[in-house]
Image 1 (cartoon, rainbow, N blue to C red):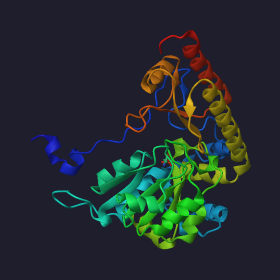
Image 2 (image 1 turned 90 degrees about the horizontal axis):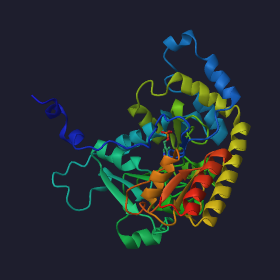
Image 3 (image 1 turned 120 degrees about the vertical axis):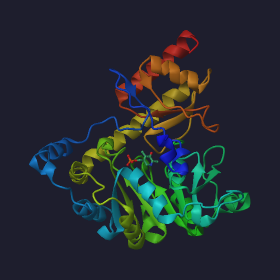
Image 4 (image 1 turned 180 degrees about the vertical axis):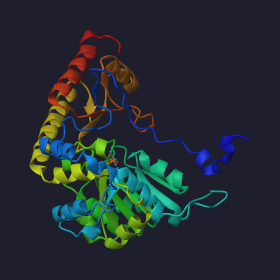
Length: 374
Ligand SMILES: *Cc1c(COP(=O)(O)O)cnc(C)c1O
């Protein structure tokens, strides 16, 4: 008997999510997965280290109560409005399982039923289609405008592809990997037109000028996703959360694992909330580096999209983006390239520290200046 024959046909047909590389190469400048270049604050490191003792034998708080109370205070809501996850990725997966049905049609022809539809704009976070597939839900990927701006409600109605009744719609805002911010008024109009659950995935909101958290307080069918990973330098600890209506939060809560959020992560996130000034200074530094990098790369012939995040999407001059990827890699600078047709002419580069930005600019000038074919 072949073990693979024991696996559900749906699972056999899946393609695993491809995350950005995490190579352990010495001296590598890692600008490929939007991590924060600055470490967690000294207070967060001290609190986390202090929690490493005999208590590791105990289960953590199953509902991350202290963290939810503190987050509720920060956002002006109640703890019943908040669910914490093992990174926001876990919560995005829970949302798919909580709000959408698997698509059980045998032929899968024609438009899928709305109750079985996970909807999102393309391009946006590449995890959404993977989550829909693992659940057996149908995917409705609707293109953004060619300049990656958000289509308006009337435009979506005319286009006919957008499903206003989709059980679950993910909107990455500001968007990844384009970096574009969406105006809160536009998001509000879109949310108001939707009949299913809408998740506004705000992984990069701290680098933007506005955020849409109040949408989750205004519309009962809107959830806002946040994470400590990017802005709060805690990718390693896996802490994300949703803010939304208590009835949606309670539904998600039934679907999660009993101890889904690890104890040291809870400690680190709590300490982070006690030291927000430190992080706000980091946001300002990263935004300043981002704008300098955008100016200088534009001067070097790159077509750089405006960004409200901690990364830049750009069309490099001369050789194809994939060649630039290879050449920068030779210089020990790792950036991200996506093969999707709308994205393949572009590179996505995480905004690192000023020193990393200078190293990137130096490599770019080298290729351009020597006329060496990258
Ligand atoms: C990084 C990222 C996430 C995942 O965050 P985690 O909390 O680390 O799981 C979710 N959404 C978007 C758009 C992201 O870029």
